[in-house]
Image: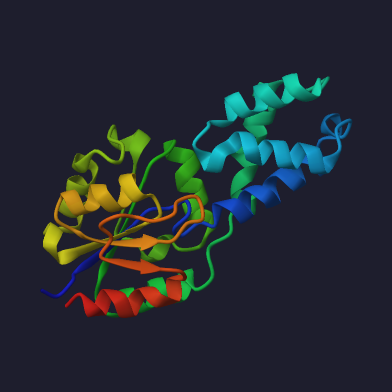
Length: 221
């Protein structure tokens, strides 16, 4: 059956979150003198450790950093607010993202984003990548009141695109939230390989880079 839609995760799939976070944390350190009582290498390393690939929200990260490094003159709330408003300026897409999306769109495929996270924050990051014009629907967990791996958020996205599950492909980096969950509703699932996970059981295909994606989608029918 010919595919009619491709749905995407954001962090770790379209957004190179590791590179984006490293850029942001390094710049935040340079911008805020109150952080510079700590060695930059130590601050950046510990931030990335505590962040745990985005699975720990930044209120906890900043509170821990202030306590561990005895940072004075900066409240964790101020650091969090800075993160919320400035991170988007450091958002980096994975290589070939724009070309791959453009090629998929040129073949008449509908595109949607299905992402966990805080609504406005994730949407700002999505827009910062310059890929918004390619997308027909955007679903973010806070705004939808649903969170992956709940199948209902995938079903809602398919409804918005007016396609059936068997006519759609989902691309994501998380073995459970993306791969298992999308396959559970009947979609094909492509795993964007991620060093955080050794494998993604049940994936219909695996891509190392987004330049591989259009050919794999075509191969599904």
